[in-house]
Image (cartoon, rainbow, N blue to C red; front, side):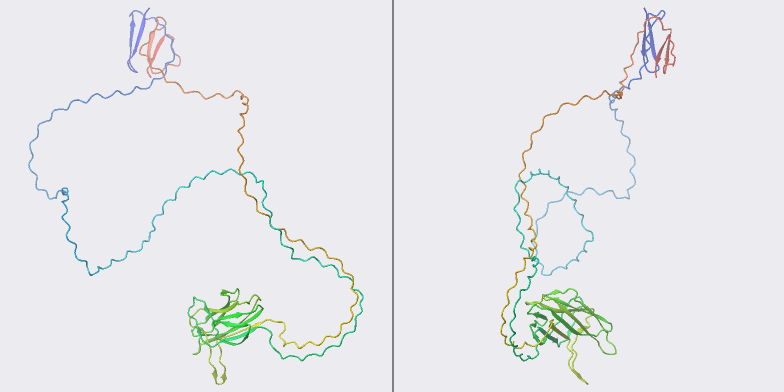
Length: 450
């Protein structure tokens, strides 16, 4: 029996050795050659050779021309020891000049980063519903609505006695004023100090009054609750060459009274004369006034050339003074009569007739509203957590899958053998090829190098 030894030197060279060397008769099982294995790692580098001998020193060249460029400055020497400190000089008696103030920064400093949001704490368990009812709210107040009145009983028959003689009528009293009132005026000139500040209007004189008084020179004070008519007239003067506006309003106990402002256009000065205007307004105040409540007049304007002016008496013809402010306050009444005369004597009373039957009782009044519901009692404590239930039975196994699972990865290619032992018989030719032919020859040994 002969054998053929095949040594693969590289991908393109094969060494064949037949033992013994006579005729080759071999049989080989032609399996498919696997792909080439991965390239082995590169071998390590060899050691570095020894350093060669140093060559002889060359001759010194001629000295170059003097450099025109200064070389770099050498490093600074180390700092010497500090000498002793000299005595402190006398304090200066002349202050040095103050340096200029730096310009204010126009760039805002950067805002620091916002800290991270902390984690929210866990929510506590909800307590069990309270088993204690909250207290019952108070009983509502008694109804203030009376029930309907029952029908009046029929009038019983009566015998009316004779009417006594009428007494003599008393004399009519002199006319008088039963209501509260006040009449006031001012004889000064009040200039507008500022166009941006409200200014109180002063009234320095009381003409007459009853229950209505002037306090502190500008507060109309009411001693009694009632409904009052409140009327003022104000003499405005304008020395400006343009029309200016004046605004007047009421203050009640120091607070602006709603919807009480009036705006007047005061004429400009013209023809050598100041502009003048009389502003008049009437109010009716509610009966809440009284018990020390007070009302004031305030004003403002669009120019300090405005004033509330008193105009002197005229001489030709003679006219009285025109006050800067006139204010009248009167109580609103149905009648204002004189005192009632004495009542006449009462005549003799006639005999009383029999009393009629009592009328039926009226329906009961409407029940008062129910009082508010009492507050809910506090939440009771949380009950203990129940025990964990046992593990349930295992469910049935699912049906077998009808979809094939994915194919596993291909294993690595085995190493290429360095020799093959071919039995005698069947091989007549050896061929080195890059890849197997589509139809291989049955008596040829193919060696694939690709």
